[in-house]
Length: 239
Image (cartoon, rainbow, N blue to C red; front, side, top):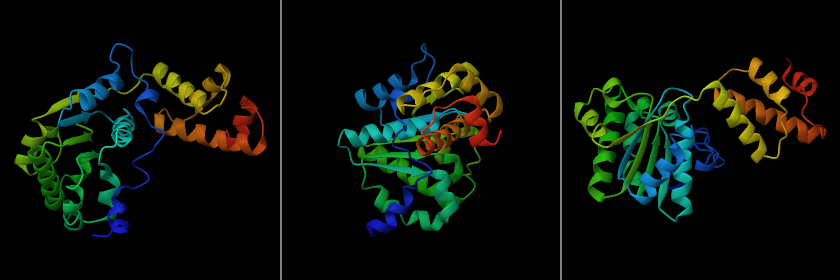
């Protein structure tokens, strides 16, 4: 299989290099990034199942795990379930199995997208068995626990239920504001409390939507060379 064709599996919507363990906001008492980093890279847990509702940060953590693996020189790969399901058939995905089995660290974000299609389900089942037998690392994420997803392959549900599961909670409003402030600071963007409150009151409350707002403001600020004020936000976002 050619490198160009196989690289289509790692699609831009799923992985973002700037999403790291260090900039994931988690309640102090949980410290999810530290826990995951320890489980995956210190204890070398062979299979980890991340579960959480939409906007809980599963993709962020999957991207972070992949980035750390690459930094450590591991032969790692990232697959976005949604992108794969929307761009190819289950039969086509089966053709990629041998390519994916070449890696010793695989992240599959959003495995719920593979449910309801026998080929996709068998492919995931085959990947799990291969990584388990080879002693390699497999990290997956889903919106719910295996038994609550629409998988028809019962053996797959059993396999997915056999490893360590980490639940990821959706951030509270206070934690989302803290996350936006942290992302802005890391990118050299100054957001006053008034601006942050104005954005939060008018934007969608999903963290993804808030980060898109931050991207737009950052781009506009660079073009116009202005500080970010409430009037500037109104102008850029049409609020």
